[in-house]
Length: 139
Ligand SMILES: [Zn+2]
Image (cartoon, rainbow, N blue to C red; front, side):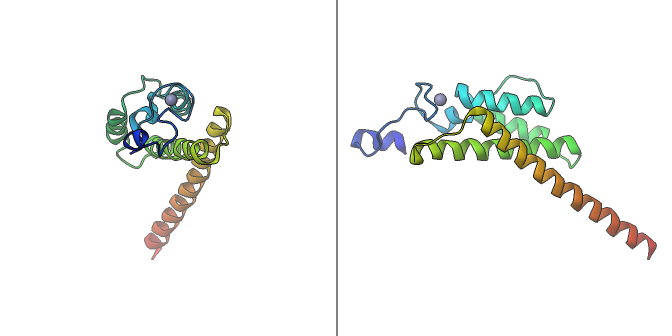
């Protein structure tokens, strides 16, 4: 959309909000941009995953293939992926519209916090389910 509006002078710049000099696009934002790519690599490492960053459609495919099931590593990957996409998008908007920005470290910290909080709530709902089944069993 921004690419189309640029010739009309409606959008100031079609350049990436993270100042890498490339044109912005969804594929660039997730995670071809050196800035967002370094965040995603870091988050993957925290999940004990070391691999090349793929083009965006392949990243989605990888996540779909590797996050089936409800065991802990899959839950963690799904949460980490969702939180990273969310916070990269928020940061892009912050830079586009508010002209303010967070550092890479702060963004990673926010992603960690998010994932941590959701894991906690998953854990407590899992305990809840076990208790539920336990009491069902007793009855
Ligand atoms: Zn960029």
